[in-house]
Image (cartoon, rainbow, N blue to C red; front, top):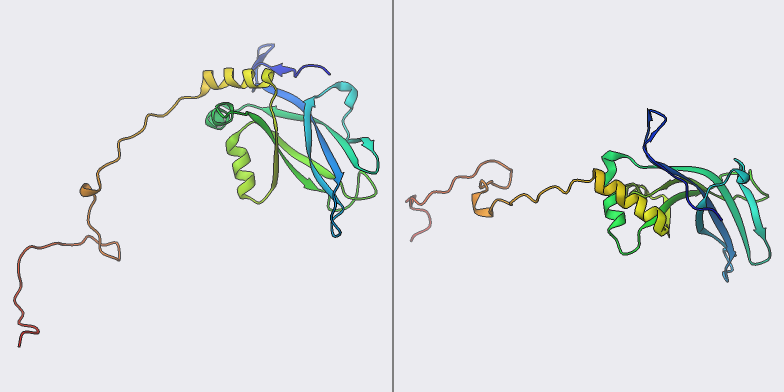
Length: 195
């Protein structure tokens, strides 16, 4: 298997984003469950090769599992998401995240197949997809990719200084309707309730 081909941001005078092209391997495995005998999941991410072609293909099929190769996913790095990459690369186990969905109707095989939609290295992207109730799985990023990502983060991520929080005593006092409240130390004598 070849190394990941990590492309720099500038090529031949044309400015473009740094990227790496990967292939996603999805796995269907038999499980011991009367209602659902199979489970789909992310198996691996490998360097994309021209020999893979452009269409998904079945790599392995037996009574225990199936493996499908989905080639040609471009993972680009965006400078405005440098914090998302920083959050990934500073974890104990940096990773690729993959959003995948089941086919609505079987197109690749006799039964619907799990199809990757997007591959990213951004912690923020993964979080947004999880919030949107998408199926998101991860696999560890190899050291070569982690080093490449770290170089991008070092070049583009700026840690914002923490702002001092104003003490609560300086906040304006509001009533339960959000209007400014008045506090008075004057005693009012309205004669209510004595005697």
